[in-house]
Image 1 (tube, rainbow, N blue to C red):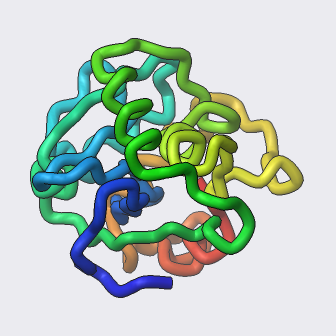
Image 2 (tube, rainbow, N blue to C red):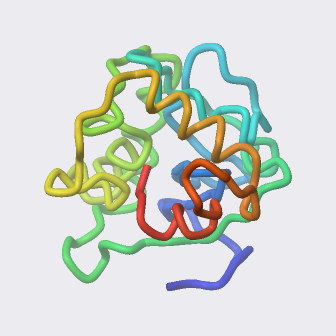
Length: 174
């Protein structure tokens, strides 16, 4: 894996660490990224956008990297370069720019922000955050409970569950 705050190059995948999940963008140069985000989200939403997983629509936006990152950590993470050959940078950038402003279907399991950027870079949508063999169907109220609990932080202790958030995060992938 690469170092945090490594200087990105056009076509690089940017992994942004938000509370409870990772947001993904693709660097297009000049300090800007293109990413898939809920229509109502604003740049720098950070952890508040954890509820974006409940949306079924998303829009492709071009924003300043620093605005998208906000106070979160990020890194360049071209994690599939060993598996797929990246498309030529000019094709990646052209394809990404052609999608700006488009609204598209969003699905946590099959059309999330990581699928979006890996498809741009490799021509293959892929997400490590979602593994079909690990998906357990839950009613929406359970998901909302987990998300609100995740927003409370690493050391939040739930006396009913008898577990710290840090222990839960190591066993659940959003």
